Image (cartoon, rainbow, N blue to C red; front, side, top):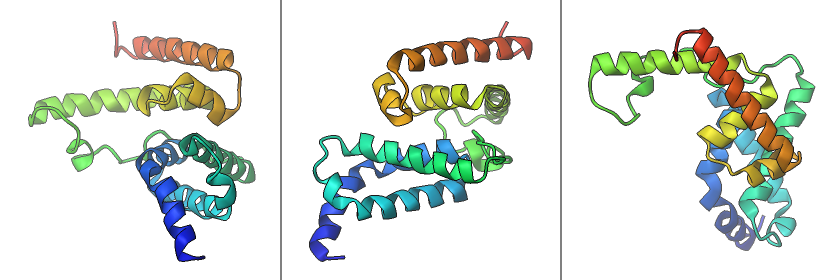
Length: 178
């Protein structure tokens, strides 16, 4: 590992750290697994530095690589389930960093809504949950999701529509929306 390759790699990858880690978190659902996935991405992408420097959109390439690493891991451990939020994650100080008034009653209601949403998300199929999380939570564009998951844009759109419709139904059934 030469100093110039370290510098080149850092210049290409560092600007995307936050978004890539966020993607790792959404895919893995748990901090330790997200960190492992993120670290594995960095190690594997460093090994492909020659390819990476030739790419116009390194974030898309890195996101796709991370998704593939995640899928490979899931195939190895087929019984492991993707979680949207780790149990106990949103208790106590879990919502303290979120914007809003400093009001315990408001915080309690917000926490309850977040728990209901998390429960509703867990009732979606994994493919629908992933697309909703990538698009609505992480802000990925449809074309980015298409490239990331490797499915046609029409399929991305229809899955997103179906996932939102099903999520709405679940929340209405649970009494969250009327």
